Length: 228
Image (cartoon, rainbow, N blue to C red; front, side):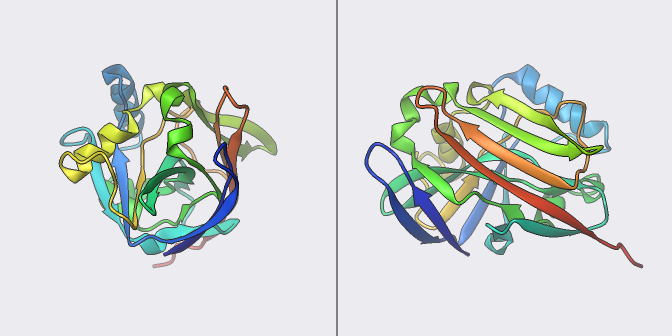
């Protein structure tokens, strides 16, 4: 899947077009065991079985990636999850933002299949990983949904709550702390305030408190009828 990013940072601004041929979603990626258990229980509340081990690496189709402002889903039981989006290009690691939009009804049957049936929205901006690696734990991921006509905070947490990104990469590659060219990874999420639930729109951001910079993206969800 071809993606286009605007790159901004200390090393200068520019545009980057890349072809993603492999997409990996790191699930159950919390750093704190209590936080992992909270997310497991959060999903168990809607019928999702416990994972066999943590973290898990789900392979899904790269064709699910989209930078469009709207996605379509079948039925009204899907929802987004804000996650860091890592990718390698030209020998350099970059950081962007994505939503692991997931069909929650299908998730009770198979987590892997539930991740395969929904598009994965991706932001159009990215940072060089090297520019934020030294204060990675201070970065904040946050998402909002529109609920009853009001915009509410759906998720919010520092990346200190999640596994260090290079550890996740090494766990997937078998030891190498770098992603292969053309591979992208979603790096885990934080719990939902008030529990997991659908919404008509989803906005997300990655905030760097040291520089004041923010990566952001939003999308609307169009629900298609579930017919039999």
